[in-house]
Length: 75
Figure 1 (cartoon, rainbow, N blue to C red):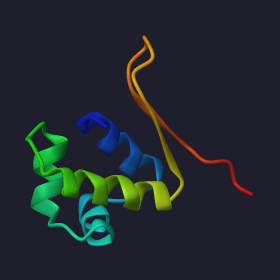
Figure 2: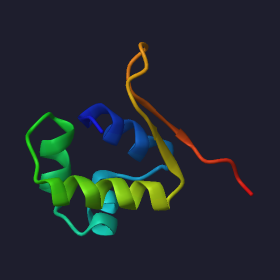
Figure 3: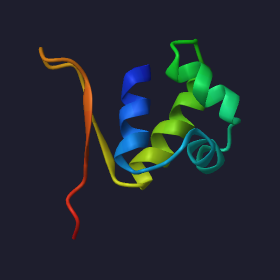
């Protein structure tokens, strides 16, 4: 997961920085720093990814066209 994927995923589910931070159990400043390319602890990245995946985000790894995200199909 790269910083731009976090920003894209957050936008896809309609969350602001504060909402993602709350759901992941981190500070809003941490989310902003990571989205701007700062290093983060592995546990912080896992928390962010878990919160976004629980909201329906699927992370797409590098596949020649760059990393991305999409939303899970509604059931």
